[in-house]
View 1 (spheres, one colour):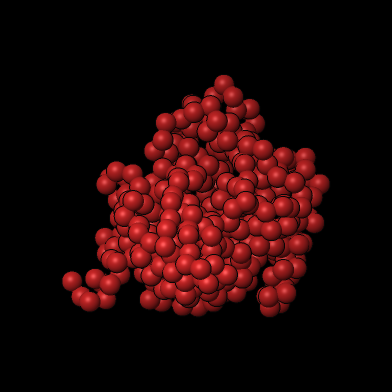
View 2: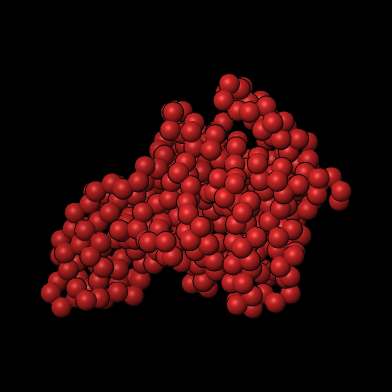
Length: 366
């Protein structure tokens, strides 16, 4: 083991009980906060399946409390070795985002004091800002228009700084970029997953939505070609459950395991088509997309007319059935009534958006 590899392992724990005041002191100093932690206690937060999070309450040496946070969140790998093996790319993406891209992004994310991962990618540790008392959005409940606008303007803070930038993956072999062949493979996976998905919800999904989903699968190859054009960094899973809200205007984005180089409209459409009831979305989508576009322009994206931005939003809507169907069918946890309600809410809202925006007709004409 090299000296640098051995040093990196010092910042990785696999059990919150391994964290000592000395370890936390060093982790905070690693991230630029010079304070001495003399005591701590922790409790679990959230309910992740393949990662777990713990809030650590910190007691700080007098004189350092003005510099040190009163609490932080540790995010760690979790689950069985087999489960961890399946999500190694996600672990690498999350650690990679905080170490490589977060400093240059203008999206609101938790401050990160320390981020490290083992060579095999199965164990990692993040020391993150505690966003408490901010609360996560609830996918089933949706959100209001002020929250939606704040979320989209925040999203532009990820897309803008990396807009059409070449070399984003240089030195970052963990960063995904799905090419046309990759979308072809995803289309095959989606087609296979669609059968059990429609069977599972056959008594609860309107026939119109089932037809929209089948037609989306039929158009998936065309969609893959269309979203391999302009690119930036995209979150990949930008939805209410992955956003923390402090009031209606402050949004923090978390869970960066789906980060990739991709088509910005996928993020915009995935969020907007699943966060709002169809009637509200229809009435407000022009205003909300305009707010996102205005923020892009403020960050220097000056060669992207609003009309193209709205067209890309239309093109992005298949992202929602793609992630919803695959997430439902291949979830590792047992189905519950709450999870079924969430998936149904997302898929019915998404199907309405695909029809309202004429996405499949747009794809068929290209």
